[in-house]
Image (tube, rainbow, N blue to C red):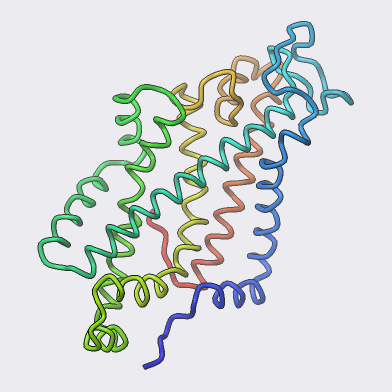
Length: 284
């Protein structure tokens, strides 16, 4: 029996050829990621160098977006802040996805008490609001970027596990899985060679939908003082630092806020386009 699901690469090619929205959003996100990767080479100044004699300067050739209250280059801090926001959001997604894929696939394929125990645990985690649970974990571990990353990983993997479990349960009854089982293939071989390749396309959709939320969570926790600690630049922390000057120099909050808005909006638009194509729904 021919499989109904297309391989991930073939599906991506079809989407890229047919969806202009996907192409445009992908190009925009590529620019943001390149900006983050090349920050050490394209940033005009040291992002953490303090010079009080230059504080709150207007834009100039040396400081294209001006300076903050400590005389640090705003543009350089935004560029380096992209490395934190995008880099750690990607790390959270990959780690959460890996754990969720493993747990969800095992639960769906094994069934029985294994499925029941794992899914009841996931439902227990999902019973709490996402950000509230993250705040509780960070409160126990203490403030810091790595504590925020760990907390988000511990919370977000359950959503992937639920989705992959449901997909595996559906695939488990397909004829090609039955044929592989009759031929004597081991459960691990069936999962690795037949099930995982057929549930890969939704990973692309989940990645775009979740990356925006991860960036917002990191920025929100940094704004509250629980995430990245000074003097490391991060968009949410920059908004927190600029709030004291909202009347006299609102651009200190405006610039990082625009970056968060553009990146999250692009991820969401891309995710909506891909979810319509693959039929994957949001978890919110």
